[in-house]
Image (cartoon, rainbow, N blue to C red; front, side, top):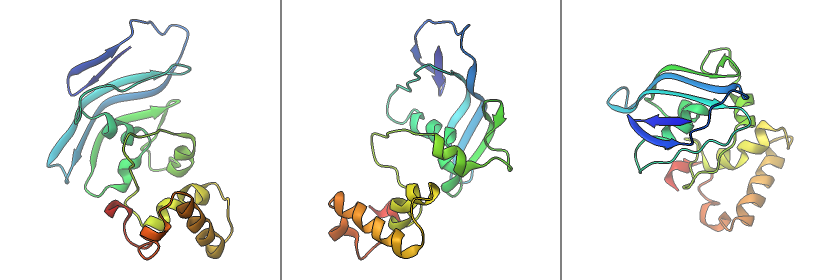
Length: 170
């Protein structure tokens, strides 16, 4: 497999994929931040095969995280992002206006090197997983869960008076 980001060959394992089908196809993807001011991804083409491990390896700033955010639609949450090209999962365009982004994100996981909160409140970020999985009922129960999670992470005292502030300020 060959992964190319910003015209740099980052990783090749030399295997052919005759037995596995393409799970995710990235075709001619370009992404800009700042309403088109910063061209962050340039003409990215990539097939990711089912039942295989894929690693994005490269120098800081080459687009690894930006591409991952495209794959799980986290760039939707960033104002001023412009995306062109297509990304399909099982042949379905994940950027189609009828595509269920929340349901898709439930099945897509990653562990980032640096925490990467949504551009929402601290409360909304902590509550996100429980909310999309229907774990709690009602605001009071959610507030209790958020407090419990923040206490377990030893963050409650630091953020308890700022729960409605953007998590990006952390």
